[in-house]
Length: 81
View 1 (spheres, helix red, strand yellow):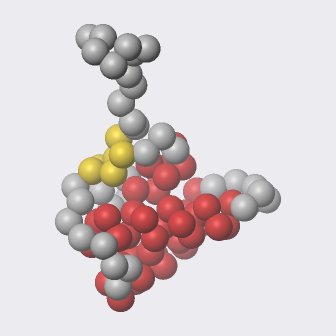
View 2 (cartoon, rainbow, N blue to C red; view 1 turned 90 degrees about the vertical axis):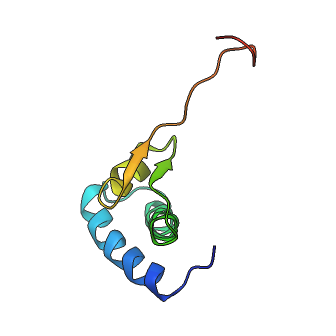
């Protein structure tokens, strides 16, 4: 999906909120936050209802605008129940 003007506006808001939620001084923390904000904003503006991620920081930010869930786990064998 394209990252259009509506996505950009929401991503900017999420970026500002995310700056207060994450510890300062992380290596590439600003780049990661920017990418997370852009992904979340695009998903939200294009109609996604749930964001799945194994990154807790990303899920916490996504929870501001939509539901988020951890990735499901699988057994060693694809067909295990």
